[in-house]
Every structure is written in structure tokens, then in C-alpha cells.
Length: 174
Image (cartoon, rainbow, N blue to C red; front, side, top):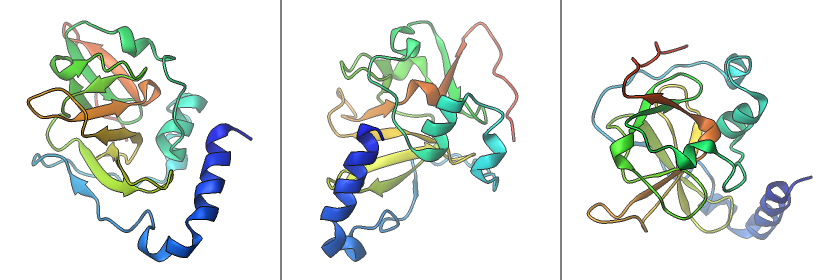
């Protein structure tokens, strides 16, 4: 049993009286941009052999990697961060910044690459975001980022792959 499981159990128990008002499905998914991206209808099991077991747990079981564990925290080159499952481009390196949180953080995603929904797992409402194409859980967006947008897209490094600007983007999978 890990810390996340214990916290989720406590949150679920404490939320029982409010369950109808605080379900994870309470808020509809909202696209973060206007570009059209075709969603895939694959079940999570489809992606199991395409990513590492740790990445699968983050992407399709909504786990969170340990803070400071991703080598992408130190990535400073020009390039694109793509979804680790389907390779959809999610963030440009120009929007990456050091948030001090221990996770790769960005001021904004590539238009149309993310869908958001409300998350009440920790009882405090948060905005969770997922890859628009494969549905893989990426992280949470907070309102404590730098100006001018004031957003911090806090991402799990295991949910991303980095493609340096000198390389061509990989073909989409799925």
C-alpha cells in the first residue's frame, strides 16, 4: 500500500456525504485549445506494451511519480515534449520553466493537445489534464504560474518524451 492509496481511501471516506456533488465526473472535459485533435477510443490495456510499467501507472492509472525523479526536470534544450504513449506534441520547450516543485512545469500546452476535468481525489478541487488523443493522465494545472498567463501545467515526467529541436517528431502511435 502506498501513500497515494491511503490518501485516496481517506478522501473517499471523508467525501461520502458529498459524493453526488463531488464526483470526478461532475465537470465536463474542456479542451485547452482550439486545434482539432482526433481522440482515440483505445482502452488503457492497448497502451500497456508501448510504455514502461511506471509510465503506464502514471498515464492510465493516474499515479504520480516522486517529485524530483524525472530527468526532464533538467531538460533545457529547444524541442518538443510529446505524450509518452501516443507521441502527440503537448508542450514546446519555450514554455517550460523551473517551478521548484520537482516536476516538469510549463506555462501553456500546445493548443488542442489537452483536455481538463475537475479532480476531487484530495478533497480540494484541482484541474487534472489528459492528452486529448490517447487520454493519458499528464498532471494538474494550477493558478500559481508566472506572468502573463499565471498557469503552471505541472506534468509527470514519465508521461512525456522529449524530442530535441534538431530531430523530427516521431510518428503518432495508436
